[in-house]
Image (tube, rainbow over all chains, first blue to last red; front, side, top):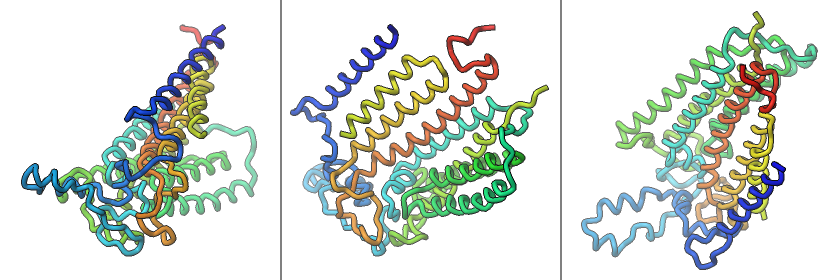
Amino acid sequence: MKQVVSILLVVALGVFVFLALYTGDHSPLQFTPYGEADLSTRVSQRFVDKTVTLGMGEAETAPDAQAEADAPAFEAMPALVVYGETRDAETGSANMVTSIVVNYRSFDTLGEVTVLFIAAFGVGLLLSGKRKRQQPAYEPSFILKHGARIVFGIMVVFGVYVFIHGHLTPGGGFPGGSIIAAAILLLYIADNEFQAKVKTFKILEGVAGSLYVIAGLLGLVIGGYFLQNFLPTGVVGDLVSAGVIPIVYILIGLKVGSELTGVIAGFATEEEAE
Amino acid sequence: MIQYVSIALMLVGIYGLLTQKNVIKLIVSLNIFEVGINVFIISVGYVSGGIAPILTSQNNTSALLYVDPLPQALVLTSIVIGVGVTALALAFARRMHKQYGTYNLDEMEGE
């Protein structure tokens, strides 16, 4: 009976969502069909062209409303961003998603990292107390234990590579941190004695988070806005480019890696029986 | 097509949340729901024939046809929040199991 009611409710909801999205041909709110999105009618075009603050600056300097109406700033043809040539672009990141996450919407990312911190803190609080290592059902062999240590090194190096190159290639601080946490999880699974030094990771996490806020405050002091990019952005596509983005992404990578390690350590231990 | 699939995934997740009694299954339903929404948001920004929004030495100018980078950035945030929520929910589930000896909501009884 309950299942039938649930199915009816879900189907009704599905029909409602479908109708809301895909009908009303003449409405300005009509939903774009799959694959037919037109970037030039969206704000996203500005993220691709790296011209987000261009219009705003001109609007501020326009002497009167008439001049503004004559030359809407965003209709000006933006300069082409070319890989390896463009210097001192608004944000020097070749990866546009990174430029949004860590430059234009960096404040949002700071909040996101805070949410992750609170979640990890909650896990630590719920799974606290005097803890010992959970014993797996199997006894790991010599080959498994030592092979896992070799793979561990490779995984950590790969994670560091992913978050250092976050502004050039797919990836960034969050995937890089997750890869490092996965390396620690591998050691937990392959070695029944292993225990991460959770306290060290907590200190690392706190330092990385504080440095992120300090980078934001430096932007406030030097650039005038919180988390403003205050370093030269360099040539698009260079490793040392994009100003503050690589620094912030390295901090995020360290912070996410140590937070997830704390979560894994919480789940891999059990409370000691009194 | 993929938009219908993602709406269907959302509905499967809601159905699971409505009917299941097992805490772990509830968390799995929550994750299915979340995956559906994430796929939907990504699909909103898809442009036919578009390439990933990253400048490389091959695709080296901003004049090429790129997919929308903004939904991807938002979904990155959403995935990370999802990881945090799942971790916290699993910690709660483990605590409940320790207290009541079961994951089933019906079998849990007050002291």
